[in-house]
Image 1 (cartoon, rainbow, N blue to C red):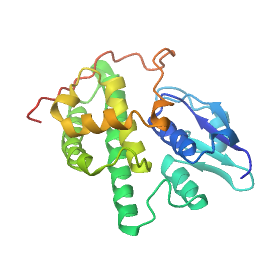
Image 2 (tube, rainbow, N blue to C red):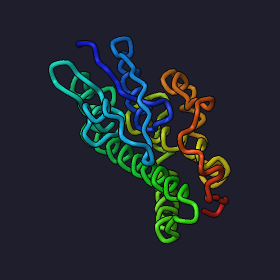
Image 3 (cartoon, rainbow, N blue to C red):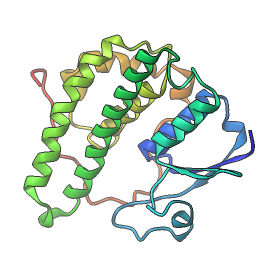
Length: 225
């Protein structure tokens, strides 16, 4: 495979997802990492727009193929290069892995958008914020029900997406107490953390933050959630 370039940021859950997928396939030595920070309140980076007209990361630049943007497209293409690793070969298991990836990514989407809405301070829309909270509170029990079926030793894209989602809760919603409310997710999160790929790519907490308007997000889970 030719040399690849990944436009990414270590704090982006989707960029981390793409990076871990590449690592799981053993491809990181063939990847040039290009640090690219984005935020809704920042002007789009012209260099990023040249590769992705949507101005979002991650983007995987493949010589002779062009840029692949959106983590789901990236991992789908990678799976076609090395089938049976990122997604199970069995069709039914493949579908369940895609279902988990879609749900975990969806909850992550809401977490990111909710934080952006809260950062607007007095200008935030309470109805929009409440809608985001409802979606998170609805999605988490579904993920909790899936957690006992997951094998942390058989890492795949669905589990990577779930790990990135829960890491986002830890990083941006640190006081939400999700582990007490969702013990199966907590047990899986701890177990999968020992996997080489997961352990190698934590969210760094010592970088400047472009979105400092929100210190503590208004989300709290209890054992009855």
